[in-house]
Each structure stands twice: as structure tokens, then as C-alpha cells.
Length: 252
Image (tube, rainbow, N blue to C red):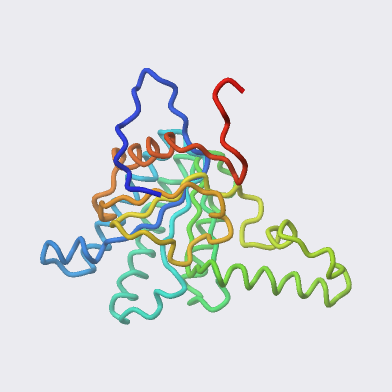
């Protein structure tokens, strides 16, 4: 785990692209505060950064981009900020969904939906339904999401199966639990990026991050761009991924 300070890859060399990249988009408020602007302006600029990043991910050949858009804990923020964030979500889906669809992006949503405002839930479902058959970049939106909550939901689903005697308790394994997560068909992230310099996962994809490479960048999210994404990928390429095994020795 380190800051993304690696040089950009030589364009003459093969550029290994991680299949699945996840991003904790952090620092909107601090970006705004540093400029004497209201937090809402930081969130608006963050949406612009998201547009650029989705475009760059598709151009670079990333297959899956997962974004931490709104956590289960974010509801504790001031009501005015939550209203602003929900307004941005509405505008993003209404204004950008058609363009994403034209670009072949498929939208998936993970997180708890049962207690969402019906309008917000309908917008999320609309985004998924419209883009369901697209085969370009998959944009996974973690909304009202918390990793501990996701694991608890998975455990509850397994418990129902056990109680109904469709599964024996002895058959409950890590693999079985993983099949009951919010998106069990998706591969785990190869690379998780967090902006703003903070170095923690903050309840994001805790199960799926078991063997992900973590790259923490000092850039606040509104300033994140293609160059920052490529720099994080360059750091990823320098890592030796062992998945709990031994390092591969030269000449063996």
C-alpha cells in the first residue's frame, strides 16, 4: 500500500490493465474548503471528475469500474448536504444515463435498496434496466452501501436456507457465503484506489478486497483525472500479486 507516485508506463511497452478497478471517491468537501467554496460545489465538481473517469476507464480497456458513491454511514451527514447529494444523483442519472447507454456502459447497483426513497430507488432501477444488455464498461455504483451490512445480508440469506433445511450447516463455506453477496457474479477488484490521501477502506468491499492491490493517492477527488488513473495503474503494475502464495523466483 502506497501513494501512486510511480511514473507513467512507457507507451512502447505492453500496458497491463486491471480488469476490475474500484474507487473510493474522497475529498470533495476538503477540495471545496481549500478554495473557500461551499461543500456542494465540491460535490458538483466531483460529478465532473466521475464523468472523466468513466470515460477514461472505458478508453483504457478496464472492464469493471466500481465507485463508492454513497455509503450507509453517509446518512448521518447534515440534511442539507444529503439533499444536495440526492439532487446530484438525480441529475447525473437524468442527464448522463442516455450518454452512458450510447457508449455501451452497463450500470449495476449494489447496496441496500429496501429503505430508499421510492423515487431514488426507481431512478437506480431505471439505470440498470436501460443499460442491462450493454456489453461495454460495467459501472458498478455502490449506493447506500456498507461492506459489513452486505456481509450481514449474505449471512442472513444463508441462514434462511439453513433454516429451511435446503443447506446443511456443515456446508456453509466462504465460497457459499460469497455467492450470496450483492453481486456474486462479479470478480473481486484487482485495484482499489482511494483519493484525498486517506489510507483506509471505510467499510467498502471488505470481503472482495481480500487480495486487491490498494493505492492511495493524495489528490482530492474533484481533481482526479485520466493521468491520475493511469498513475495508479502504473503503481498496480509494479506490484507482485501472490494471493497468499510465495513470490515467483526468477529462473524457476
